[in-house]
Image (cartoon, rainbow, N blue to C red; front, side):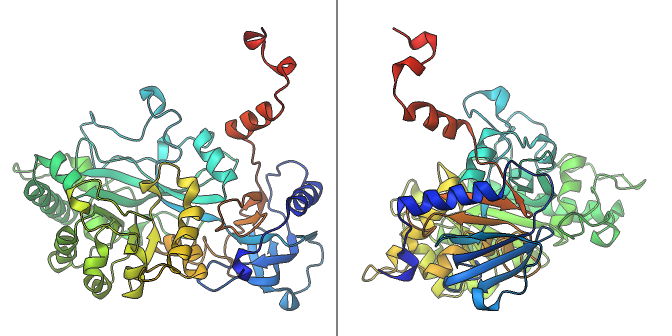
Length: 469
């Protein structure tokens, strides 16, 4: 068994949990200085895990992560003996609807689509994110610390402006509003646009050209005129709807003023554009858009047939947030899907993160990553190394989303997002025993954990009166 597969005994895991609980009682609103030793450390940068490692966090930022022999003095920090646990960066989940719904089938609690809205590209998820959503609590307990959240395309090919959120137990979930725009082009886009991919591409090009013209005529300011820095230290483009007095538009327009204005940062390359597409020919068509709109900052989402055009994707320098282990075609645009899709794209030089939106439970991202490690040992298949697999759910999605070096990694100066696991995090049975976001220990209790604890003891005397026979 490799060092990446070693696990703690149940007794050891319990010991770690109790030790950490003793070190941190309750949830603090301020960052904690923490020095964890006696652990296997994986920094999330693609490298292999380091045994007998250590991690030091001060003031909410990572100071050191690596071999214990190289850790600087930790004076004043709370010292924790990890007893063989594993420490990784927090998982970065892209793409999700976290914070936008509680019960999918109950419309009043579901803000993940807006099929009856008169707006599309202008939709901004930031005001709707609910930090108390049980979905956020459940995924935090699974080691997810940051996520890209967005609505789904429904009334239009445009889903709207997604946000990057943290999953901390505080009211300030949105770390970067209007972080990206989402558009569906393939089967879904064609269906929404009028029943054909032809209609979707015309609608998309028209929207970009409307945005380009409006941005020029209305003198909408660019990124250099943005508001002060956010918590991540990034400029947030000024809301393009605050466009000044030059607001006249031609009569032959399809988009509302809000929607056209919202696409101005996209056409200028100031806002990431996520393009949902699966089929190889559709991917080529999307890549060709760079010739027509060279300033677009794009990433592909889905890309089930990406391996067929992996060299083209790599040459275009377009990253991919790919479905994890598709091996059966769910529709005609995925006929060439294969579990080796991600591995083959990585081998061709494509930057690839694992897509959370393709899963029923995004909290299982680490299991999908682990399956890609196992796939690499199958003759004729293409998987990922252990380090590559962890990076595909931590530093790589962070890089694609524009928060490289600040999330998804244990690099010096990065946010103190780390997860303490009771074993190899890419093994199915491993679970987090502690989660920190910005150096703050997070509570892991949620509805699921309470149900687990409630029914762990099946003594009927403890059942509610409604079940007391």
